[in-house]
Length: 415
Image 1 (cartoon, rainbow, N blue to C red):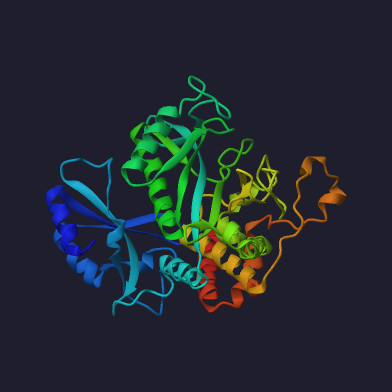
Image 2 (image 1 turned 180 degrees about the horizontal axis):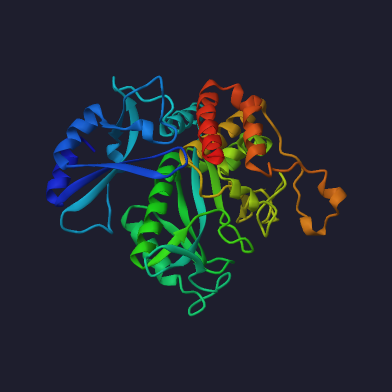
């Protein structure tokens, strides 16, 4: 849309506030609200913000940063008042001369998608997201008391979250995000919502929107939604399963060019130790690994649903792959970039997948398990893997954003 078209929409729909949204390096949404008359200036020159206050954007070499709205991301916030509506745009971060800021994660993902286009394919990403619903106290502060005591696929009255999930899904639809299914997960008060795949950039934007919707709808109903990787010590953790499909001319690359699809998948699997810190950013992220169905070993399968990487078969044909280690603490722009870049490195080196591991780990001896490489089992170990990664250090763009990200994560952990 052009600025003039947006201004016409604003006038016709009684929009009084515009949110210029972005996220910090941890994936937490931030925003600056402006009045409609400020939009044209923001679209042309960007809206200034105190970047030094935001994790990842405190840059001693670049003093002034600005938010420039991506007009294609325009969306009404349905839970805000219908009179004096609120419009939201996701923004690119730019410098004072209007150039894209080199260490803006959204720019990095856009550049990575362009690399894929040069190889004549497009990555599409879908997400399966888990979260807990907890009661709040008399002052609306969150507790660790689950909203219900249901378990996997339960229905009401054991499942008290079905109306919350329904409201979340309907709100997502109003905002242009298509939910595929929702249900009660294994833990008490734990829920899952899966949404349809889209381009990598749109899914990254959609994930930030989705977390905002879950939080807003839950709060409106007097409960608290937690995406924390392991909010309850003795219960299932919250995972974020990432579904990656590669398309060429609208067709699955596994059918159009199965060798390239395998190289890409092998590239991701072979660099899991290098990129885990970008997929699991908190110390508690590593408490999930090896617990319940959360993966611990770097293995893959078509049949076994508990493997780190699974290649589902639909109608007798493999379609993309499902990466099961990430959690919702990600910055999706950085996480998706790392996954795609790992796949591109696999294509460049023409890497092959190892033999699949279909047998359950529960049936294996410790000696048999020792043959498989493990994911990093602490945040510190994951940080060291990234710092020593030839894959990351060999790519100047990845190294620059990795250095910034690791500095932010290390500082947050030690403070």
